[in-house]
Length: 203
Image (tube, rainbow, N blue to C red; front, side, top):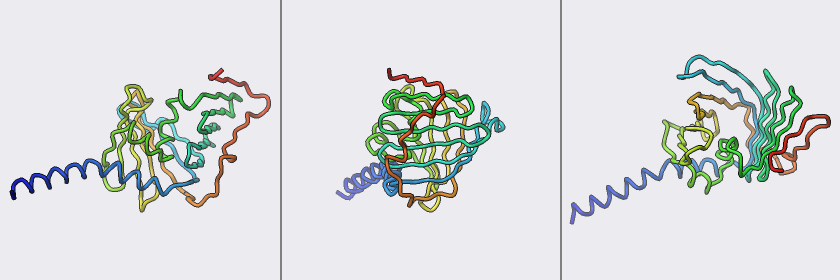
């Protein structure tokens, strides 16, 4: 009987350990209703060689599928996500594209930050990546990226690493974060400015 109880305890412990990373991540993301701040983005060359591109900007996030990502240097670009559409505004080229969220692979990392519980559980295998880190491996055959790692420090988002489908790594660092920002869906209502070239891929 003692052997049987020990075996049952070991099996239950193993199940709990396997479930812990996804539960811990979801618990951390559950506390984020809105978030704004700044970021620095570094893209590395093949085989994780030296940095080949550096950019900076600011972002805003509202749970429920709303996100804005603005690159301010060296070029100027804006990505705005709503539950319906993903907008991409290239301010230097004066172009705007719009795609339905359901057809866009580019939104996946943003959805993770939004803390969509069913999306995370159904779409990723989630592993521990050291203290405060979580590695997400897509289950889809062509999700747009190979791996995504989120890092938290003292319960607050600190960094993100993305390995794209070509094996190149993009590193993001977050700072000046505000988790008390009073944001609403109206703050993500994007309207193309006059005079830009429009490309709508849902029509």
